[in-house]
Length: 428
Image (cartoon, rainbow, N blue to C red; front, side, top):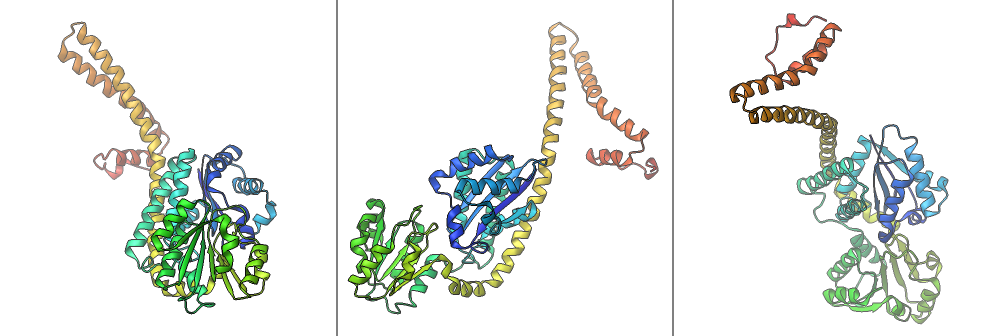
């Protein structure tokens, strides 16, 4: 059994590549089942966010070139040339794969160091894999250990205090264009967790007004009511766009929501008053060509580096403590994996003992029903059980002695906690 992880993230690939390998939530179950059927793997899960797509899998020990096959599968599934992904992906095996997952769960591998959203996303990906039936003993054990480590990191270090999220970084970036938010109107596209966090940060900055746009009006209205905002549908965006000084978008759409033509028209109506746009979605919600328009300042999630560097500098001590906790988690995982190797033997041992017990018990009950002396029946039962249970181990120990395998004899002595024999009993 080998555990692998294969991934593409904000460090290894540009946004152009990352958005090509995003898995839509509604397609995740089919993707997992396709992976299991196509590749020689026994367990699999997929994490797909705006900053990373990662596949975790368990393969048999004799699996041939599993990572290469997974890469080919990923390229085929998303209709991307394998060589494009090959230059952008990273892979980890066994202990290193475990360590990587724990770093991801704890927020140490995030663009915003310590951001809390990734743990929820990881738990969701695990739940989807459970529902799809593509995780079993090995990945179940790994995920539970990763969640436990992430909790320790959150509670025992300062890495989660005053968390700086992508939403916070985006709002801070917008202040480079608008230092005073008092008369600024903001259009938020989407109604998920990221947009909700953006709205909270905007209110803290005392922004003038907010409009929330979503595919379904009901969800937009729920969010708008919470933040004293106005709600519109996606279809209303073009006519409303000219009023937006700041536009921040984060949806799960697989196609752009806002094109160059609509923005160009809005800029003309605004008489070239500057417009700040931040596209936090992957795949992108705003066509890249919009960046070529005058008076439009379009940023993507990859443009938040300065805020991110400030965040990382302030959390270096906490990150060092978190790394030590993760190493503890990796060591605990190794112990648990080793114990799993013994589980099958223990089960087989118990099953064999119970089978012998049931056979001998049935013989004893038959003897009792035939009227034989109960005391004699019990003595025969005890003697027979002892002989049956001792037969195979005695024969193997005798063979070990004859062949000079003293380690086997010592192991048996230790296993059954016998009184330590005289050292002269063992001669190599």
